Length: 342
Image (cartoon, rainbow, N blue to C red; front, side, top):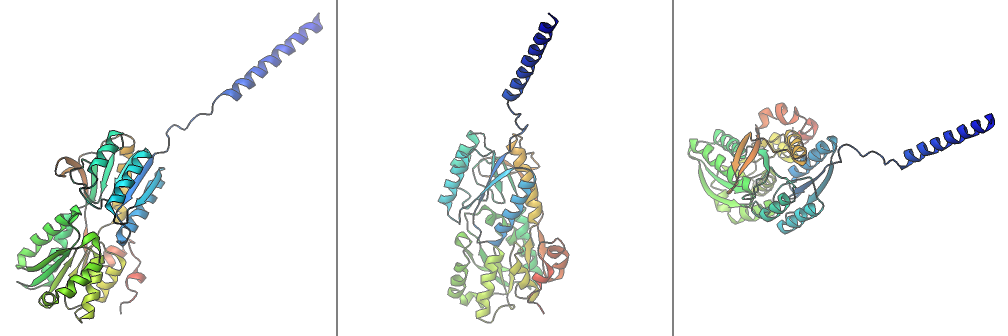
């Protein structure tokens, strides 16, 4: 009898142990508290060196914050950018940032994304009439103002200049031009001609200058929409022994532009701390991906909607403050900037 009790107790314990083991085995693994967010980045083109830097810094900042990043480059093709936007919608991204090629070509896709709960951030270029969930950039009117002030400081009263601007499809071009024209008024500087370069294609610059050499020979300055256009301008001027004799200004603080400035063929550029822009954009994108609305630090009218916006401060750079700005911030190395300088 005693023996039977021992056996029964043993069997009961064995059954209980098996039951515990079975429950443990069948218990599903706990899921992560927060699923990894997916963020899509749409870039215009990498022909302009500035966008390569933005891409690298922005991707790094987002990955450090623990999100999955998908980057698409449209190579200046606006139809391709529309397709890439649709791809991101199909992939159910949690948020999308776009550097628009054409400020008016993504309106429908933005509405499609938002209808599926995907917020869209205009990165550095505002999408017109798109009603994006936010806009982050540098103060582009201030960029133009800095370029105009540099030109006015260097030139005499009543001097003559040419303006080689970016494409009208880029909404920033209007703001830069506005700020520039206001700044040069103090010296009554005359604009003999203005041209708008398709897709920021610097090859057009050479054709324009060669076809208008009669105007080039009359001017004391040339305003260029960015440093890539300034580079081609200076190359063409050099072919006519005019490099360094005509004041050239640009923007973006590309390495070759900084080299030209210390060498004396380009007078100034506008430095836009990309690290600051990318870090701020990364935080905004994650907040949007988590369903938070962008705080209205200020707003900008996109033609239809008031868009919550954040604007960072640009910095004028000449030979005099190159070391204290671009180099001090680590944007470029000193040995690279002064590579060809005496």
